[in-house]
Amino acid sequence: MTAISISSLKYTWPGAATPTLDVPEFEVARGESVFLRGASGSGKSTLLNLMSGILATSTGSVKVLDVELAELSVRKRDRFRAEHIGIVFQQFNLIPFLTVGGNLRLAARFAHQANRETDQQARSLVEALQLHPDLLEQRADRLSVGQQQRVAIARAFINKPDLILADEPTSALDADARDHFVKLLLSIRESTGCAIVFASHDDSLADFFERRVALSDINKIKARELIHV
Image (cartoon, rainbow, N blue to C red):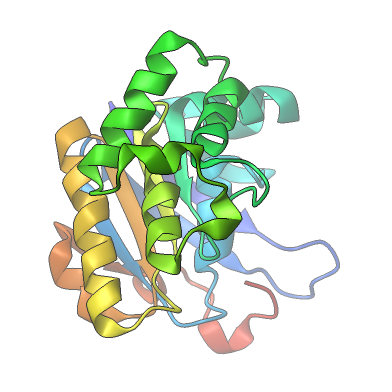
């Protein structure tokens, strides 16, 4: 079973004159770590949104864990994403007025997995990410940027996903913080065995991953032709 299997994918944003993506074929194996490189505006975020089911295409196939996402209703795609996919966003997107524990429990609740084990899983993740367990009771808006980064990783892994999608999560970090973030992310990923697709314009991060893929090599649409990302 592949983690991701894409074939004959074409995607055009509503109202756009030209397609953003034209991907004949792309696969990610179960448990594989992939660095997806592309310049800003090249369509990386669009491709990750299609992989996660946030967007759906009417042309071509996007399968995740052998499930054809376009055949699912919006509600079923949301449920599938919550149960099987962890996402690390560029801006982390923590709920500021919730505690760290509240943010993690909310992610579990979306997948209908919130139970006693959720709190145990949250504590284990926080400790594995070198945070003090007392931070579980701290509001997210009172955390340092470094702490927010680690909580974002914990939230992505709280439901023990089969796939992690990371969309430029290090773009605002300096070199030391960037490398530390990626190492932490991959250390948790290695302990779970899930697949990961890490999208970034920063080619210096590629060596952390098993496979490097340039979006320009799989997308037939040239970056200069794009209007949307």
